[in-house]
Length: 447
Figure (cartoon, rainbow, N blue to C red):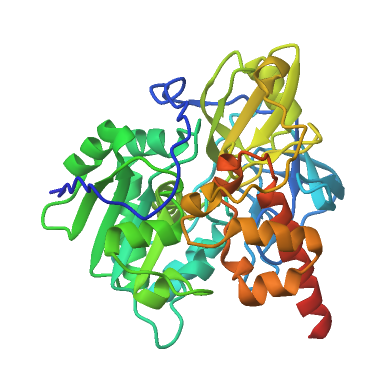
């Protein structure tokens, strides 16, 4: 059975931006059309790019391995459609950089079925076999970070996982991907939990769901296997509740140490959609070819939650759903931690959780940046108790090393709460990103 705990308390600080979830939260997941041309970057994850193993002119079937993992911190890439490899070359990405990739022309008359592979059964597989199966399936964190899941699940020597946390919070405004996955893919989620428990050794499991997804929490609680050590826990609605450190603080009352990870206090946190993919793919020995994405925003005509093949060009996506004529901004991800798109020729990747479209009339321009007035709003918002005001001043002065060493810059996970609350329109997150890049480059040059 599921045990509910209506917490009155949550992590300290944080903010309450408008949710904007009503437009899509009740819309079921629908299969998206297959684009005539699929564009696949070999770097869709944190770590080392995949290594291409196919050649130009080769015909491939959906689910076939196109690129193998480039190392341990890497995952393979599978064909999202059956078709022909038209060419290989550099492809654009949301970062502005071009990376090696594959142009795959889909067969228009194909059924696009995925053939069965050599499945991994949770009852008989060893933890090592499950870890390898997760990497072979190309699974990464689907909450947006796209960190290779098998790496996250590799428990360091001397550490122990006491609790597995399934993150169904989805606190980003507009996004309802995880909400629909919890409602429509519960069986995959619970099978995925079995694999995760066997890998991590966790004796108990908490499925965390925010209170604005009550129907999903009820649905999952009704599916909890009898006698299973699984609790569905409802959390108050607050941003950034879904961040790992905040979630651990709320659920366990423990603080992840500076520069540390949840495993340092005996926890592993896995996104609920990632969990569902593990339960869906591993029994069939298949690789990830598609993912659920919320497409919404005031500039979208056919809003919804869509199952979209990886590599589908963004321009094709927007043509299919229809958009307003005066589009001003497009974001991949949510409005708080997502990234603005500068080029519609990029494609959907494994880390794409949402596509938001805004017309010019819905954009509030913050053209004027004013000096910090020391109001303290950013300090009250920061969930990890940094001093964004001081960090912003140091960033403008170029004191990047001082920011990192004295004011814990590298602990910032760029949630955007400080910038959201700043009355002076100071782009604090952008300042911090630039400073963190400078610090990383300096450290890299030293080593």
